Amino acid sequence: MNEHFQALPIDHQDAIAAYPLVFMHDASITTEQWLRFVRRRSRSSSPETGLIAIRDRRGVIHAVFSYRIDSDLRVRRRLSISDLIVAHLPGSRIDDAVSSVVADVSAQHGCQIVTIERPFATPSARRTGCPTAEALLRRNRRVN
Image (tube, rainbow, N blue to C red; front, side, top):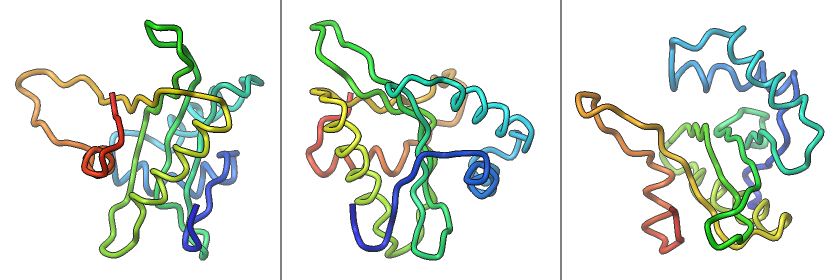
């Protein structure tokens, strides 16, 4: 990881602390909806799914994502990242931290492939890319 950020699994307390980030990403998500989402994800005792928060030394959460381990068509282990929300602040190096955490989780589970899911948008919806996914692509990391 790096000296400025720390990754941790999201529990109820961290879910409350992460809600402002979720709200900034999508103001239509209520606190109750977010906490229900975290509860459902946390109930799974499988080590192959989870929610991760990345926080700074002050405890401020700058990124969250969910993950699951599955297989691709070639039956290789794949780390699938979804629900990626990142607060981009000038000079924060959060993209490097997210990349590092994803690499660590991938290695921990023996994954050969990493997929970062992008939400489906209708043709009429405004298209905006995820800055973190774009940064990972610029670093020549394979993002499916």
